[in-house]
Image 1 (cartoon, one colour):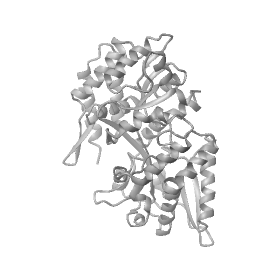
Image 2 (cartoon, one colour; image 1 turned 180 degrees about the horizontal axis):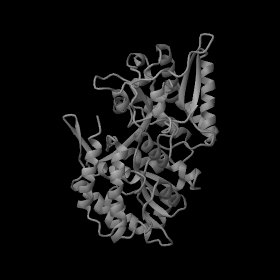
Image 3 (spheres, one colour; image 1 turned 135 degrees about the vertical axis):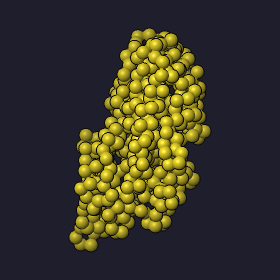
Image 4 (cartoon, helix red, strand yellow; image 1 turned 90 degrees about the horizontal axis):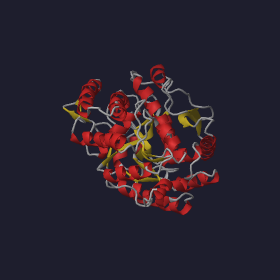
Length: 452
């Protein structure tokens, strides 16, 4: 399941604000009668997402038919910030529950997930998962507490139609930040309210994107020494990124006058054909088409210029109080529903039957594999593609050369602080970058001091 960045950030922000204080929780459902094992699972899309809901419910029915000894009790939603903390504390946590990549470390430390190390030894797909993604669900001793089921990395999303109008080659997107700046100038010169490049700067989304800029420039946001986290972004690399944004905003006038934007704002502009570029993951593209009336052929995604990118994703963990039978059933569901190699083609055909896009990175099959499974996945997506795969080739090729970095500890508090830096640069022509970073450094250090 792929959500728009706006929803993702809002959910993460609220989740981070909740204290995960419980040290365990009882499994919410008892086994069904007749020898069946009943497991509650999160991840059922809301009824407003009709296509995704139909696919999920059909999968539940098929899985139960193939596994008559297991009863799946689906719960709508993913990680609801209004209920997640209460579930943990009140013993109502589902048997199989959804997490973002930012969550497992704290969950493991607080013993809020079952150790599945011995249970996954016979799961063939585990050997085909990218080691770096599986490591997210491990403790310091190498024990495994969950499985990754989706992965994304930030890229440069661009409007191919505007590139052509501005005399730029849409098949050769910018490969450096100087090229991004030059392309933004040409696109904004088209007039009629066209904006070359847009950036987010509120509701924690500006901070989230500034972290992406930092990684692209080769900086980190925080470093850990002797078990203590400290800020690590007040440096020349991040200053370079901010100076570039300041120059694009005030010298080039290629970012438009309206600022304090969030994800839906830039998506609306891009869908309307008024925006040339913004930072985003490929899962933005279906949003542009479905919600803002864009066309798949008009969009491309390139890898971020620079040396790194922000890596994110999601997975599933299991209730620490789940019985061995429930753990076994839960892992069978996670494997079959999200990961099994022999389900890649059926999953693609499900989406085709619903007139959904095939050929986008990570949609509808997750970008979590390596080895033979990854090769098979790529071949099948090419075989069944109904959107132009070439529009995303530079993203896939370029990402192989970039270092993937996870979000910093206490991410949402860090993002809230860094929002102020982005807002300062984009709304104040005379903003002092050194002062903005110095002020932010002190506040981020306070947020990082809370990390245990």
